[in-house]
Amino acid sequence: MTAQNQFGAIERRSLLKAIGAGAIGATGVIGSSATTAATNHDQTYYENPLYGPDFADPTIHRADDGTWWAYASNMSYSQNSDEDLVPILSSQNLVDWTYEGEAFTARPGWLYGSVWAPDVHYYDGQWVLFYALWPREDDDDLVPGIGVATSETPAGPFTDHGEILSNPDHPYPGNTIDPYFVEHEGTLYLFWANFAGVYVVELTEDLQDFRSETFQQIAGYAYEGPTIFHRDGYWYFFGATGDCCDGFDSTYEVEVGRSENLLGPYHDRDGTPMLERDEWNAGPTHLGDDERFIGPGHGDVAVDDDGSYWFLYHAYDTDGPETADVYGWPPARQLFIDRVYWTADGWPIIGGDETPSMSAPVPNLGQHPAPVDDGTYRIVSVDGRVLTVDGTDEGASALAITATTADESRAQAEWQVSRLSGGEYVLENAASGHVLEVENADTSDGADVQQWPWHRHPTQRWYLHGGSNGTYHLENACSAKFASAENESTANGMNVIQSSWNGGDGQRWTFEAVDDGDGPPPIGDNANAPTDITGDGRYEDVNGNGTRDVADVVDFFENLESPAIQDNVEAFDFSDNGRVGTSDVVRLFENL
Image (cartoon, rainbow, N blue to C red; front, side, top):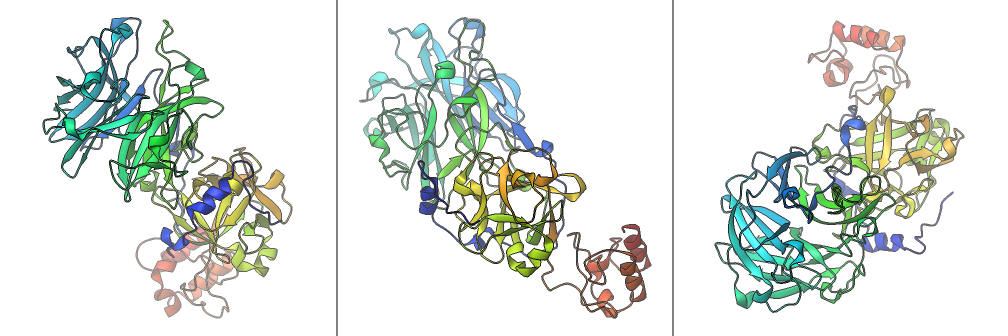
């Protein structure tokens, strides 16, 4: 049942192998008491889109009180009164958003135009809003440009300070829109783009003028909507490419470059210099269409408390409107958010599979209580079969086998389970040292679940969601599908695959902690040491025979004062009062 792992036409396995196989020890597997806590799927999930029908070109920044603030373009050409002058949203969790009003009380006066592509930062004690001003009704007699405004509070109103930069001010072709501000080592930079290249110039200290001798190009004609940020030794450029505004026929997507230096040179994942990318949608896609969501792009990056990265962007929902109002304009580009995962060699994978998520685990999940503590477990299906692998080789398939068969190759049926900072889990096989993943990073129903060396791709990350009777669902972070016995079969030795959620027993698993040898010694005349069969750090199986029954209560009571019990209070403190006594005998009996 061991399958060769090849990617075929798209060669995604080649990509993963190129990423490199690191040691699973980097995840910090820790032997600990095996406590569990219910994690309800509905409580830990959000659904895209988050806000609409029009919140284009979003930018985001967080206030000191923890509130997230988002700002967007509004592109109504039909009625002046319909045009919000930079709509503002606030959120406590990056998912639930509240409309707060507009950034401006009146249009910036230096050009009669629509305010596009805001970029907001907190700098030097004030909220700073960079924005593009595009001539209303596409008036060719007016020249678009970038301005700046400031406010004491993120909700505004913002005071406009006028134009910084427009087309005649720089030596490059194209219009001057889509600003993005970066402060680095005391120097202030303004990036901009509009399918005529991505450029940068230094700003003066008051942010209201530019230094003409500092112009530079960093990417080719293919891009607009730049986002620039630093992570782990690299500067990343997220650029939008393709047609943004043709409704459901839009071709927008996100491509990425990176550099060790802010000003470049930037290269994409294929190694191509971003300066050479002059054709729409020609580079590797990091966020593109799926069957429902169209034209994702032009967003901003946020980092949550648990260290996870998130991309806030706009896209179309084909289950919703194509335009935002009765006039047929603007296009209904709604607000989306998706997790940014990172490969072992530092490339972003947005949304797990590089398409917008319809539903995904909430931000900051790593700060929620852990459903299962780090430790070594047997992962057992509801019908009693144990999750194992067909050998120790790379690519060996995961199987569901009977407990008797699993005892013959015990280590292959044991998993070192460790939670990552973002809330997902890595499952490392105790025999092989490889981790559980979905074959070829496949996102379709029926894809085989296998083991491969750790390379950090989302296909090797699993979310655990609590179900009924202490069971859990194992959801793959790349595909959003669930580990299940093939065809829902209960036969011994069936392959484990991924499938869409169906609520059946075939997708429900329990985590049985494996005794690490540090538990209490045998009690009384018993030959076997007690075991923690529920995974809660308490050794209810006092006689070590693998079950919890009246015989355990009797042995516990008869040996209550023995050193084997009194020297292991934490293991037998069933009443949770810090000591072991008759109340624990009663509690053990009550819990049978």
